[in-house]
Length: 187
Image (tube, rainbow, N blue to C red; front, top):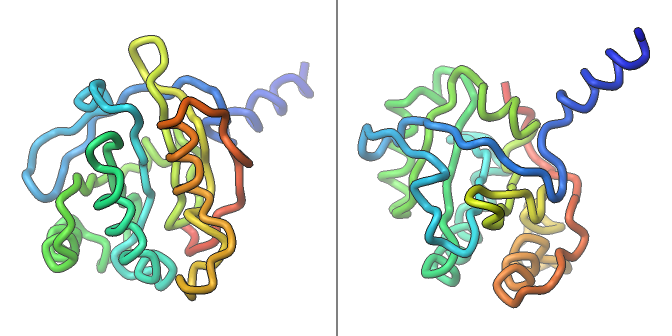
């Protein structure tokens, strides 16, 4: 019995895995002050959830690449940023300042309780989850890193998220559906 409990705890701590249905959630978008849910985007062909930070160097390195992905795919894919960090520089006021300075027009959601982060099993920023529509909800199609080189965009050899967005839109299976994210620990 003790082993079963340990296994169950390990599974729950790992968060969502490939193919698993994702529970809907409701978080405040710091840009508008309104609540945002996954269900709000049920008409999209997919959702990219990105756990990020205002100040983590790895999150900052990816801002241009995220902006480009949003530009390339926002007609079919909804992008959502989630900040679960609790440092002073990660406050909702600082989040609002960050998204305004960034100039990107996507929801930036506050998860200061860490509830959504724990449900997803997110540990790093940035860490991405590409969700596909499944039975009135969404399931995990890909999770992990945006690509294989956080520091030098021109040296990227494997654009994991972009490749999997293209696979999803083309009706193909995910390629390497679970990669190891590289970034700052969410705290």
